[in-house]
Amino acid sequence: MFTVIFGFFFGSGNTSAGSVALIDNAKTELSKNYEKALNDSNVLKVKTDLSEDQARDQLSKNQIGAIVVVPENFGTQNENSPKSIKLIEDPANAQVNSVLDGFSGQFFTQIDFQIYKIKPTYSYDIEKTNQRKLSYFDFVLMGLIGLALMNASIQGIAITMANYREDKILKRITTTPLPTWKFIGAEVLSRLILNIVQVTLILGIGIYGFHANIYGSYLELYAFALIGGLLFQSLGFLIASVSKTTDSAQGMAMSISIPMMFLAGVFFPIDQLPKWLFTIVQYLPLAPLLRMIRTIGLEAGNPFSNPLNIEIVIGWIIIAIAFSVWRFKLSDE
Image (cartoon, rainbow, N blue to C red):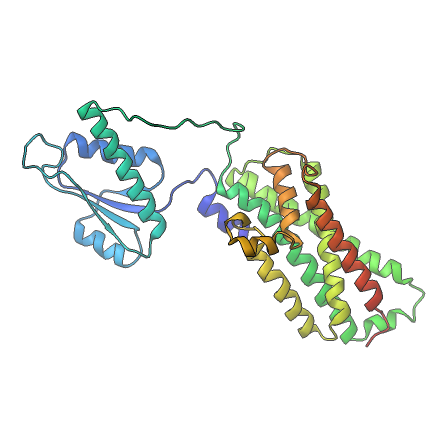
């Protein structure tokens, strides 16, 4: 569901930040060039079939993000002709406002350069580290893989085991010929298979439904997805070892997974966080896993280029398993 939702907003090469209404009362060459440049930029969807009253009504209903009003005679050589357009903005639409302000400023600065033959003294050059085409959707898609692994494994194991304990199923298993390690192994293996299905579904929807870009090895992606599955299953067993009821297991699982969903880098880079918070969240189980998955999928790089990532993941697995072995007992009621 997350993949489809983000795909509709950001997939298939969609770079639009929102919609604006353009009311051109001038119909001059300059105003037409402004409209053309705005359309060609693909950063905003432009509506030109609205009156100013209709546009203001749609802006108040959040159906558009801003309004551009071009006054009469704008762009003519008349000395008294207007020299500026009017941008009508709702402060709540910060993203659209920022894009529209920046685009308009840059457009008219270039027009001034062309008219007055003034060339800027200083400029900048861009050197790209690679020629890959990546979008925000590509970034989020890798994050959704980690999110799916975390939710299915932590909540699945913790809640299921707590439910087994509550229904005394775990105690009954100890009276059967089934070895404990086979029971645990079957639970782990079945969820790893589910993880493979999840990753396949997410990648399939992202790539074939919304044209996501994956540059790395799919084999490595699946390998690290399985490592992620083991990581979060071990955390699920840890929760199950300390929770006696299904409700408490569900609450503990949610209290762990929800903060990681927003703080470990699923939807945005964690380096945007305040420094003190970044120092903490970079060691959350999901954060290093996502760094390695994105290194593989988006950069076609070596996931072991920063050994700290795999060390953190393995460290969490060891700690969780050691605690679970100490605390988790099938015969507990």
